[in-house]
Length: 353
Image (cartoon, rainbow, N blue to C red; front, top):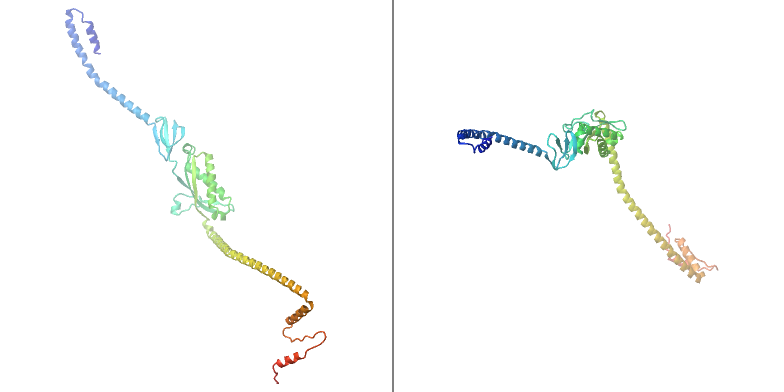
């Protein structure tokens, strides 16, 4: 604005002197125009400050698109409500600023709990929910069961958008599979030996069902806290349990007796076998020796048949009739009476009655 008079000033420089008054007037007018920039300076400074503030706000808005996902979390990014990144792992990431992109972070390693057959405070307060905890066994018996389910986020996007109430979905899946597994077993099996098998089978089957729903949940464990008969039949079940315990005790005692008796019987059988083997060997050796001796006697007997035959005959009579006095008469009938006399003299005198 002030330059126009200055330009004009350079154009009027070659005119006559009678224009000096106009030149002076123009000079005063020029001084008057020099006051306007002093008044306009604050307006320019205010505009620059507003520009800087706008740039700073725009920079902060752009920087707000940078976000950090902690180590124990994962994130889901949506753009105008549509999922564009279903799973963002821990680290530093960039998204479009709000309201275009929205980042939702989830604690995927945190275990969440729910109760099937009751409520979480029931185990602490000792309460039962008869209607919620009743299950029917395969042999048409009713039992009260309470199980605690622990689960975590498996797929963040599915967890956020595929189920309206994730905990109810998980509870319904676990309860369905629990009813199915208990309905295939007898009440005795459920209350005694099948608890661990039921827990594992229900966990695997419920996980498949939840995956089919697309709920984005991973079941970590299912723990059956209590499994009891109804109060009306509790006494009968206790009697059955007591009888079963007695049967188990007797069976274990029988096993212990068997474990003690069988080794002893085997040891005795081994001793008897060894004794019989030794007896057999001794008899075989004895018979072999007798046979050898008989062979020798037979050989000697063959050399003097008459003499040896008579000697054997007399030895046999001595063995057969050991307490009878014997007199041997030869075949000619000769007999030595002095033998009788000597025997009579040597005999003790008899006393008369």
